[in-house]
Length: 190
Image 1 (tube, rainbow, N blue to C red):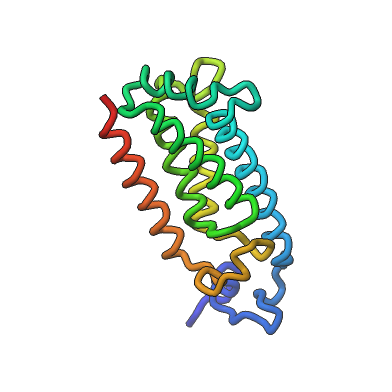
Image 2 (image 1 turned 90 degrees about the vertical axis):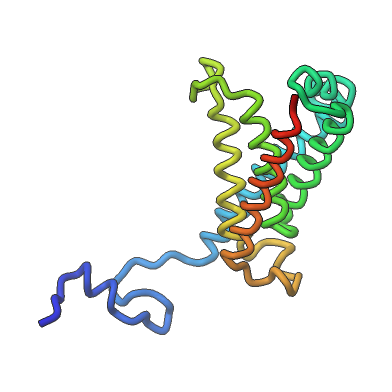
């Protein structure tokens, strides 16, 4: 005889017309969309700011020359070119993520860049006060999460037929693209 405990009942009870399990607490889908919007804008504008530091020297950044010197010291070939690529990836990916445009690819751009940043700054410690990489890890997790979940309703992607309805496969492919690209760039380092 099947069990009728609340845990099995909730898992096997068909969804009601409203889309929730009868008797359960429901959350408005707009709440999720608002949360994704906030995450996208915060991460996207943060990364766009980092990109403008590299490209233009804004916000106390080194510009292309200073960033190129840093990249050269860290063993990247064609350091100035890599500084431009990193700046464009961060600024372009960040702005696209903020507005929800091609979200899986924008998130992949940020993810790949931050994986490189993590590899360069990794000290074996987590917390920043000990030279750790908590900041980079948080940005990596946020970018991967957005690639996998999609942008939510409040995004430019809603108006693009190909990505209008986000699929997990798009996000997973974007994460794989970021991992492969970041790995290739890291292998090119001296």
